[in-house]
Image (cartoon, rainbow over all chains, first blue to last red; front, side, top):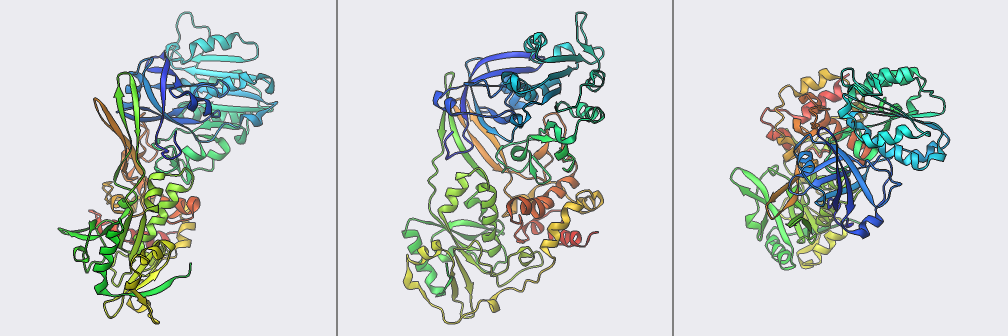
Length: 279
Length: 339
């Protein structure tokens, strides 16, 4: 990206395309210009503008960990015109990427703390970035717990990584699907995320909670976290307002005087409590 | 720099225009276009509109075009080649810009440079000199003095002209850029002896206390009755944003054919329901009243908090153009009085 044109994207080659779940894909992207790739760095929680030339741009997080260099990954649902076009791109094809934008999860300040990740459906990607970051720095943290739910078994993303995480002794993984979403050989929990969280009842002592999911899941999960003793300033989530520029200029992602693209996407519950409910 | 006062004879404008053009600059000035007055490229003062209170649009598009190519691209097999924009813009003199509009340039500048530097805007602004023109008349929609400006306000202008009794102009040379313009034809700018512009300016009383309004707004966010009542007539047409000299919100879109295309940035409006609509169908500002609240809060509260400027220059265009006859000044006065 030249300094002169902040709207000009990097060219990225789709190295790998993975079908995660119905309508959900993951791309691993390599920088076409290797020099740009070498100079690129980001931190957990940041996002970018992904573009299909001729169709436009769409906004989502970088789903891979900053500890894994040389590529970035994104996971997205085919929902609108641009994500539909993006999903139709094949391995080897070129897309655009602008970023990284936004603030970060302050993972470096969480040393010697336990981490509790709670995600629902397509909202695992922003946390997956932090989970791998934490696993790559495993000795800096105490317990790592991941609670992840989806409507059905088919809707779970990163199934291959869930498998891998379930075998690790340094990570406690609880997966769940909504009642009726299970398959005959399903070995995880059956129930909604807030219920499963309450049942698991993880300790809030010296623990950071990170919650990403559909609004209804977040709404019902926060009271459970409060009951478990998690403080609002230790509870993190991300906001996903519609964006165009990602640069704090185009004017649509603001929540009150805050720009989600500049002051977010990562917010603590303590911060959210002070914002107008415009997200 | 110290403001220098000069006299520019009415009859000297032709020579001034000629010399400015000869120096390689284009001149944009208000020109009649049917019932409208737009800033257009002109070469002589005869082409400049006379006797108007306000131009239909400001000269915003000179630094922030309604639709602007950000870059182009070509498809070459499975490859994509980006063709970056040339950021060399033609040096421009904007002649006859009202003080409110000149002020709006500093509002836009804050948005485009507060963090990431938008070189499209910056380079255009760098290449633009503004010869402002004070207002001797105003109408019931004007309220520049209530938002920090005034009919003879020099902020944003490089040279500010005020027509005085003789029909000649009192020229205040305000910036280095202004000085440079004068140096093209210094002989046209004669010494001014004790001329005072005040008596030639339109009367423009303050209609509300800006500081109080800005401080009050956050507390009115959760007052749905106020915003619903004010926006009941709003059609969500966005006309107010498109005529506003200080509105900078934009959209980014692609336009492409088989062999390649361009990425564009175009003016947008927070009054449109699509502005914040998520793909999921969720919309944080679902109702027109929420979008009206956003318009007022953004300009008079958020801008002030974040960028230290007010996103309104009191030009009155939004009220003049509104097909539903909404009047920003009246609404602001009502907010100032609301409990």
